Image (cartoon, rainbow, N blue to C red; front, side, top):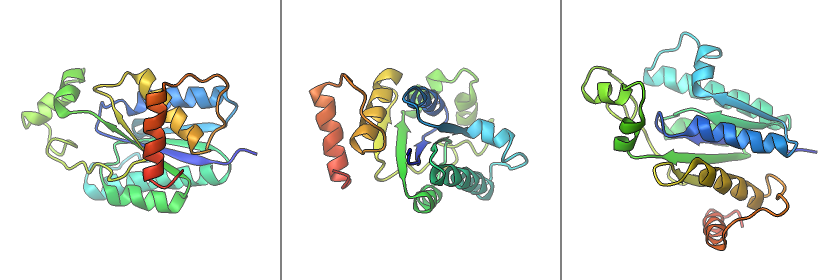
Length: 200
């Protein structure tokens, strides 16, 4: 029987969390797992309608996503949370609540995010036209020890996706695919990371 777990994508706006969450979801569905994605923007429209962007409201929003992820996880579903979730304390609270929790930090330098930003929100925030923008004039606290770190300014989405899937296989969360092709260097890097975290 499938055991549930939560994949928690955290990172600044535009870093690639939703793209990767959807790619990983597709692979896990193809492998016959039950998967639900809770995307930050979608959650704000439905589950957290009416909440603003104060620290308190952001915390409530992330706690709600964590609560739903916990319900799904304990019922054998893979829950994928993809939200900025800027504060360490609330992410760690969710980790403690859920237990089977894999934190994926999608990092990307601010300059690159501003270049990619089709809506121009970073430029407006940097010019002071938007207040309370995470990563510009509102804090983002990167994880100290995430299970997986992605650098979306240097890796293609496909490379990042493969790293996530291989890590989940090595952690024993998902069965290994037959004939999966990973470079020995990448495999060694992932194994070393998991050893450092105490998983292997």
